Length: 257
Image (cartoon, rainbow, N blue to C red; front, side):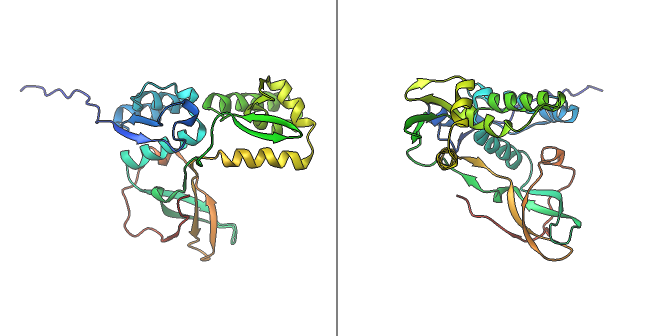
């Protein structure tokens, strides 16, 4: 009896427009991406570090450095992968802040709010702070990794963590009065600002916001209280063990921004 061999076949890729509109990459913001296959599931099931890196490198078919992706675009890609590789229904366990009890429910991934980058935002995004012109840049995946490593080192050495508050802001400062600045210079500049001036930077970074936030309002099964939840992206997100349930909980949903 002949043995039938099945060769892995990649599903076709699709063109997707990123919520950053390509501003951070100086392009049109369109990438080619394909759904997850069992080949990627093997990577997910193995776990370990850099799992998401490996997945992104396999499913993104465009010539783009994934380390240069903004966290906002990355979040959009991950949600796209879930919706186009599996189902909209996502089974999660949540802790109700009202009655303090846990409950299991189904949320719709497609209802996560999506934020498109506002019109007119460029990089660097310039604003006046404390009498000087500050140019802000988009953080990238590599920046998030570096910030996480800094945090781990500080925790390991039991060092003061108070400066962590400023690190993210310092990473976002690219220029001051048109001159590129180092991280240490940005930290010094931030430390000299009044609270009023710091508000300007926070607002500007909020203006640069884009991507998907896994946040929904959900009704507790136990006490019926409606609360806003940060939906946890567990292993179930990319390795679902349950089929869609048409009788899932009704949700009060955020509208897309």
